[in-house]
Image (cartoon, rainbow, N blue to C red; front, side, top):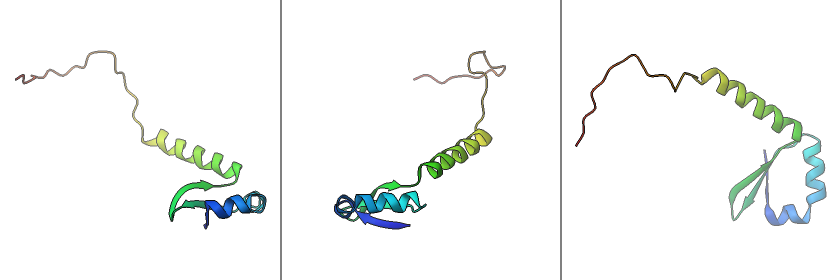
Length: 77
């Protein structure tokens, strides 16, 4: 993945956008630290869909309203 400083991005925005249209992924740095990432719009959408599908596999959805069948003792101070 390509890395570019904010100042360089400002100076070359149109060229950078063209690279992204062609499929490039670019990390933007400020003072040497990555602060953002630019990816093609379709790829970002696909990454979000993939993350949501994984979350759906791992998530447990239960009834949080009805009382549970277990009894337990609480310790109060």
